[in-house]
Length: 254
Image 1 (cartoon, rainbow, N blue to C red):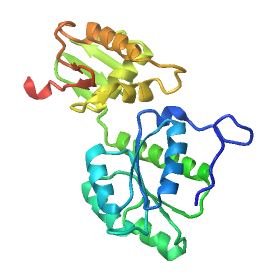
Image 2: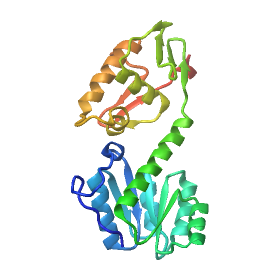
Image 3: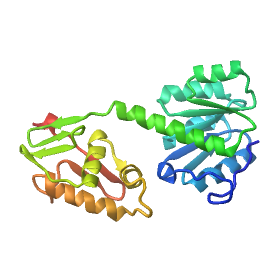
Image 4: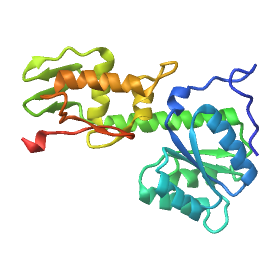
């Protein structure tokens, strides 16, 4: 069983980066209801959105339905054990996986990592350690995603050079604030993908004390005024009402 942590701010506890947790979805797959409740309590306290399943079969369904950012997976479960579940999850994609198990011998750790797990934690574990491992795995996953992102864009009207932090419209420099450029870069590097407002706030304003959706809306409006041909009829930064924003590449349309 995990040892329960005190609430953030209590004496002797660590303060975790809630900016990283904001908007992140975690899935717990474990057949111990008491442990699931304890994990959910602590993870939600950190700001994560938490889903749970009590066996591997249910866990696969939940992973497919909710597309979590990270999965906490037990090994010894009925119906489908953690090894098989991990293999099936890897067939779905590269969702980070932390395996939890009472079998903490080196061969078991090696097997867990070879099956595709990103980290392996033996029971009983300390909640502080699990939270730190979750943060570390999420950060590694973000860095891996960033390594595959495009750095340049040029469709004749709009040109972006992310390393130099330069934006050009019809060959002329666009005067963007630091946050405007960061927002534009985040949208561009995820072109074609709908980004939720909470994801944007987490990435562009990670240290903002109390960010609101209006913060994103105002910056999107300013960006459209500066880079679009017609701000009222945007072609690059598209709005999905009530859901978020998406950058559309026009290179294939020219």
